[in-house]
Length: 308
Ligand code: ASP
Image (cartoon, helix red, strand yellow):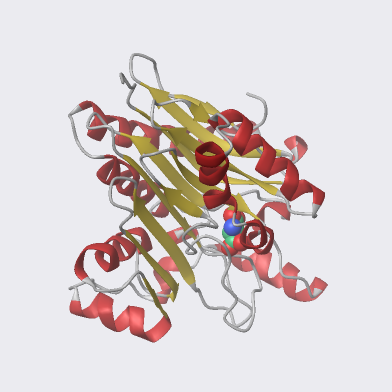
C-alpha cells in the first residue's frame, strides 16, 4: 500500500498562557521546532530511516535550552538533573530507554545505544551511566545543564512545595519527542525529558516507559507523549492507541483523541504526536497548548502552539 513519508515533533504540552508568551519567546520556540523538524525531514527525504530521523530531531531539541530535555532540563528537588529518554523501532519492536541519568547531553542517543548495543531494554541511574561510559559517551559538567529560568522554577516550586509540570510555570517549556514514517514503510518514535521540576525520590514519568510515553509498531502507528506522566502511565497511552487501531479498527485520529479525552477524565493534562503506517498525522492535546511541528512529503514544515 502506498504511504507518504512524514514526521511530527513536540516540545511539550501544558498550560501555555498566551499572555505570558511574548512574541520574542514564541519566535524562539517556533524556530527551535522548525529546525528540529527540518533536520528530520532531511533524513527522510534522503531515504534515511525513521529511527535516524527521530533521533536527529530529538537531539536538536535536547541541545536547545528552550526545551525540557538535555541542556534545558528541569531541576530535581536536590537541585540536580535526572534525565529520561526512550526510542523504539516499529519494524521489529526493538527499543531502548534510560532514566535518572545526568551529565549526558543527548539521552536519546544513550537510549538508542541501549537498544542496539545491550541485551536489555531499560537501564537506570548509575548502571545506565556505567553503560554510557563503556559506550564512549563524554560527560558534560553540571554547568552545561544550568539555565537561570530552570533554577528560578525550582525555587518557586520549592517555595510552593509542589512537583511542577514545567508548563505550569510562567516560562512554558517542555519535554520533547518525535515520530516518523520512512520510505521503507518503517515507523519510529522517541521521547526525552528532564521530568518535573522539584521531583523527589527518583521519580520517573512516562517518557522512558515503552508503551506509556513512547511506542512504535509498523502494524499501526508511532506515538510520543507529553504531559503529566503519572496519568500517561496509568492509561498506558501510547500502547493503548496501537491496541485501539489493531483490535477495534479505529483510525489514528479517533484512537489518539479518545485516549487524550480519557486522560482528561482522570485529571491528566497533556497531549501526544502520532503518525500511522500510511503517514497520517494526529496531534491531540487536552491542555492549553502543545508545541509541535510536522511535515508530510510534498508539503512544507508547519509549526503550531495553540490551534495554530
Ligand atoms: N511526561 C513528562 C514526565 O511526566 C513531562 C512532560 O511531558 O513535560 O516526566
